[in-house]
Length: 285
Image (cartoon, rainbow, N blue to C red; front, side, top):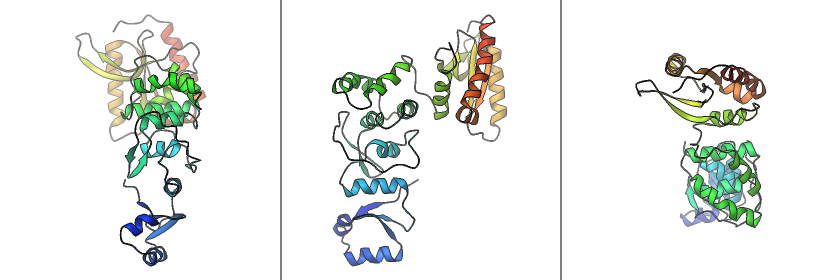
């Protein structure tokens, strides 16, 4: 969806407008004043993001931190979005870029800055969403860690702590739901990190399916249900049956609501098939 245009008084004048014309536009509701010297097209009340961007425009500051994270569409930005604090020009991760018409810190710089504002789980969710969308590379972030530690930058400890939990070579999660499930799995005692997006083949080497998360050594896989479309439950059931037939593994299926809203109960539900899988021999795949 196209974002509403914000503009400053100076920009309006540079486009040939006059103070009287600007006052008339406000009076008839074709634009609204958000900050001193900053306006938005349309008569709708400004959103939290409009207010945050207007404050940055008023101070001639690039979008950064939580505002930049929102512009990039990273997962788990707070709602409502708070107004940005004072800009600290400590950019170390690539040149600025334009996002939806606003100057913004680079995506890599943004994920580094977000470590100062988000909790561990939230920052990991933002990290995985940035990786899956190709906004930055994990190797580039990892390369910054020694410098961040040396300068004692706020959030550097969080970055090291979360990256240490990430299995080497693991692909990005494919959704926020998958990230939440990976985090939930860590609460199940003695359960190692799952293999992500595992490719299942049959005895003839033919592709059967790709499962969301699995433990080949246990003979257990998990499928996650997001928003259902017409025919999706039938397709999912057939897919699960095909994976079980090809592998002999135990299946587990969890919904968005279970993972997000009742993680403690869901972790207990997951522990049952984990225990069952440990009690039986594993079929080689």
